[in-house]
Amino acid sequence: MSLMFSTVLREADLPLAEVKLLRHKDQRAAKGRSPYELWRDDRPQFEWYQSTQSFGNRSKLKVPYWAVFLGTPSDETLFVGIYCVKYKGLLEEDAVMPHTGDVEKAGTADVYELTLDERLGDLIGKLYIDWGPGKRSWIQRADTKDKVITELRDEFSEPEFPGYLEFVEPLSQIVKLPLGWTTSLQASRGVYLLTCPRTREQYVGSATGEGGFWSRWQDYIHTG
Figure 1 (cartoon, rainbow, N blue to C red):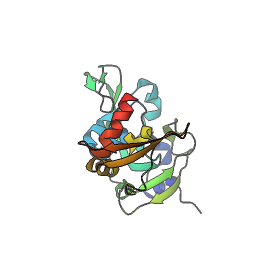
Figure 2 (figure 1 turned 90 degrees about the vertical axis):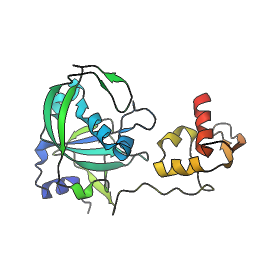
Figure 3 (figure 1 turned 45 degrees about the vertical axis):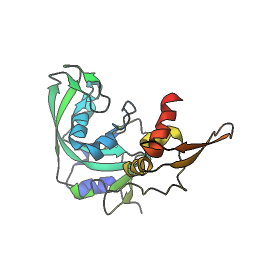
């Protein structure tokens, strides 16, 4: 029998009708600035990112609690905390948006005061759920949209780098690789094979400069 996230909320004395489930995975994010990467690498910027929201979501978001999840690079759904929510009003000053670098003009967004609740704190970065097919519906009700818990890990960790001989990824996806993988690819130089999935053509190249494989493949992405 599957364990449901609603059960975990009830055990923590969180009324389901007062909780909204949020899954952040913003397609507008610049490279290295996705909500997941902000949470992993720059927590204050992540908190600022989610505290500023559009007017259109005001009625959905004005609840006492948010149960916040992140879409990971591998498209899993990771729990990152229960937040106590207080609506503050409109954005008072122009502010740089953490995920894009663009400027959000004063008065064009709602601002929420968010406080990380201690409840379920031991599950942060460890618990994964099945969000279901409606991933564009990133705000859902906890009392009507129950979620199956798919995994509970001992600690937060990203997948281990498979090794250079086993590494196979589309160039378009390397910006989404775990940080440890990126570090490994930046640290090494050598010969690599590119293949075209459409024509099956192959190209053997060499990465010899600073930044190793990672830097060389970034050149392909930028130049086409």
